[in-house]
Amino acid sequence: MSLPEADLRALLDKQAIAEQLANYCRAVDRLDIPLGHGVFHEDATADYGADLFQGSGRGVIDFICASHLHTVNHSHQISNSTVALDGDLAGSETYFHSATRIMDGGKLIQIRVYGRYLDSWARRDGRWAITARKTIFDFDETRDVVHTERHEQGARDHTDPSYQFLKGHS
Image (cartoon, rainbow, N blue to C red):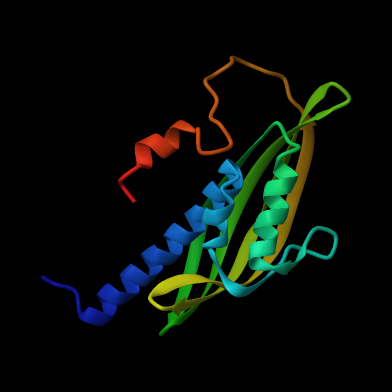
């Protein structure tokens, strides 16, 4: 049984948006600025709160990647995502969790943030990208880190092993 064309289009659109959300996480974790810029249309806005960042969508990528240069490591995940489609426009709410490790006075500190991305999307020239983002921070915490075992760690640039595994598959 085949899907009606409208249902298939909706599935493809939601998948394209999901991939862009994943690209955002990958971009800020791997400090991949060109990938991050591609998540936002050129005229997009980003509101991460007056105390953090308000400006252009691509500007927030530059800001976050520059900020992460001064951290030990960063890991970003997304989970529940609700997407409402309306032709070439869409809105979404996506829950996120990020963990950032920093050195503070010789101690390793971890900052965890939980929140939601509220995004407006547009398909332009066949490509879905964000036109406006409002970030809601639901709660956060800071704690000292007690190391357990050392595991192989990734790199925060194109030398990360993931680039080799994904090469030619995107």
